[in-house]
Each structure stands twice: as C-alpha cells, then as structure tokens.
Image (tube, rainbow, N blue to C red; front, side, top):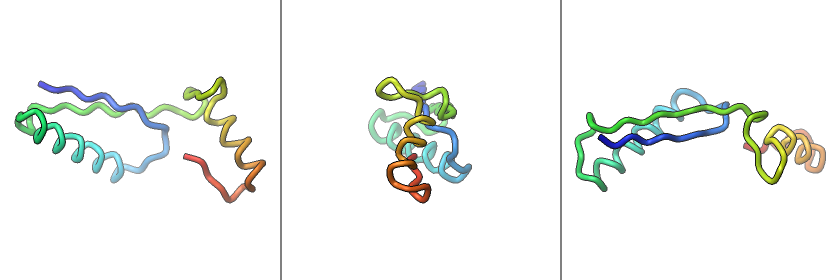
Length: 76
C-alpha cells in the first residue's frame, strides 16, 4: 500500500488539495500498478512561521519581498 506524504504551506483551498490528492493517486496507480483504493495520500499544511528557507521563515521572506516589490506581490 503506497503512502504519499506531502507538506505544503498553509493557504491552499479544499479544491486544490482535492485535486492534488487525485493527481498523486492517479500517478501512483499508473506507475506502481496498484489500485486507487490502495493509495494513501497525507497532506500536512505548515504555517509560514514554521517553514524555513535559507535561515529565514517563509513569513520573514514574504515580508522582505513585499517591502522590496510592494504589498501587491504575494509570494507563495
């Protein structure tokens, strides 16, 4: 039974998550020759204060980018 774990930044809507689960399930079925019922997909949403890159939280990166580019630019 394949188990797929995905971590994403919080903020995606239910339709995006549902689509991701369907796409990952389909790819797993095609590539591993298993039934859809055997595939498990676990999506974990992480807040931007608990996700880091380059020594900064994503929250800090967003703030820095907004200051440089203007508040209309939204980094995801």
